[in-house]
Every structure is written in C-alpha cells, then in structure tokens.
Image 1 (spheres, protein in one colour):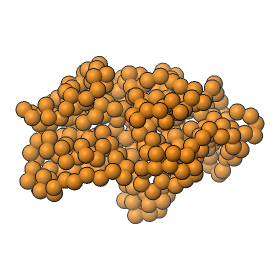
Image 2: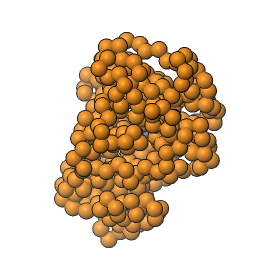
Image 3: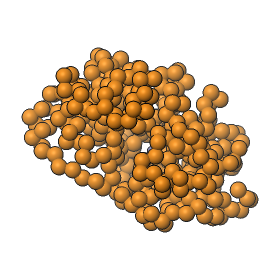
Image 4: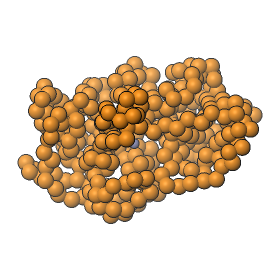
Length: 332
Ligand SMILES: [Zn+2]
Ligand SMILES: [Zn+2]
C-alpha cells in the first residue's frame, strides 16, 4: 500500500472481478481508515461475485468478515495503530424498522461489502462506532469469524429457548458449527448436525456435537428446533419434513435467487413455526464475550490463509470453498 493508492478486489458485475489499484479511501465524518490484515470469504461474497444475490449493486468491493489495524481515526485518535474488528452494518435509526428496534431490517441500511466498499482491499473506511479492539488472545484470522458469530448469536436469539430441547442443524459450515456450539452452551438436550462432508462432521465431533450424513437419519428422533444453515433452497421443503411435529424451523442460510417448491400444508399440518434470520446487529460485544469465555471456539473453523493476490484459487476455481478461507494482505 502506498500513500495514495491501495489494491482492492473490485467487482464490476457478475463474474467480472479483478484486483485493481485505486486511490486510497478518504475518511468521512465519524469514520476510520482501517488497513485490512485478514478478510474471510463468505458464501454471500461468492453470490455477489457470481451474480446470484438479491439487489446487488455494482461496482462493489466485497468483504464483511475482516480484521485490521487502524490507520486514521480523526475523532478517536487513541485507536490509531490498534488491531480491530467491527460490525459491518449501520442502520439509519429513523425508519419504521429502526424505530421498532429491528435495526438489521433497516430500510436504508449501510453495509460494509455491499452498499459501501468492503474489506477485500488493503484498506477501507468503517464508521468508528462499529470498531472494537481485537483481543490479544485472538489472531486476525479468528477475528474475521466474529461477524458470522454475530449472525449465529442472532439465530439462537430468534429461536425458542434451546434449553432441554433436541436441536438439529442442517449444514456444518461456519454458521452451522457456530450455532452448534451456542446450542450446547444454551443447554440443549442434544445437538445433531446433518452434513455429508466427513471432514466437517469431524469438526462437529471436536465441538462435542452429534452428527449424521443426512437429516433422513433423524427419522427416529426428529429435532424440535432445526436450524437450516445450508443456503441451499431445495433443502427447505425437506427440512420442514424433518422437523418434529409442532417444532420450529430457523432459516439462516442465504440461498440468493434460488427458489424451491414447498407445500404450505407442510407447515400447517405439522404446526411448525418458521423463523427467518437476516444478519446480526449489536451482537459484537456478546460475540467477543462468548469467545473470551471459551464457550465458542473459532480456530477449528479456519482453513488456510492465502495471499489476496491468489484470490482466484478460492473465488474462481472452487464451486464451494472449504470452511472459512482467509485472505491476508501482507499488511502487518
Ligand atoms: Zn458473511
Ligand atoms: Zn432504518
């Protein structure tokens, strides 16, 4: 990174992305300039790159799961040089959703990596209020996972109380395995992950979760609360059928513009309750707390760190990248 230029992965449209030089961002009122040290690749980023995200606006610099170091912070100079992480969304505070306290449903949401430049770059600007110090016990790569942990916390908050209940999780990706750890901590009677990948099931086992290859294996004892963390639309009708009569289905995976067919009678006849989960908001302090307490472990969810220059090996050459891949920028 030079004094006046940075490198950033700019997405100009579906399947049109390139690492480009661009002017170093200028901080606006209440913002900080953060040098990105680590940024994780999320399924939503892949949808943005592939053009299967609702309402995507191009050009855009993706990246909303990040850790970095503060370069400039005009109104919080004590942050300069500090390692930080942060929440990505900034609600307007005035719309009907905000007034109702549902800030992640804001009608005029500003969101890092979607409506404003994200962290697939050597530096980007963030509202100062969104920043938190990265604790010494966490690496930058682990810091990237605090954002998906906020989503997992919100999913558990939306669901009915898990204490004593049999919980099922469809899909042992990052979000599924974070929810699994939170469900154990919430005192669930049992937590069973349905996941075809043996590698991901082995991580579930490491977290003390039960696992099976497919939700059909739940037949004997269908879970009362099911989290669908797959982001695959066709799982939805099958997941509803695999949920115990009278149970709850929490849809947290994002399937973009895919659709599927599901009979409304399934929900009616089974008296299911379906919850949608969009994103976390105001959960970052809670996320830092559950990690500091050891309730949630992040390390096993990370795969290799890759220099951002080699982005094509993750973004273009794999249909489904492994568990969280993290780009490193070379910034210390
Ligand atoms: Zn994400
Ligand atoms: Zn709002």
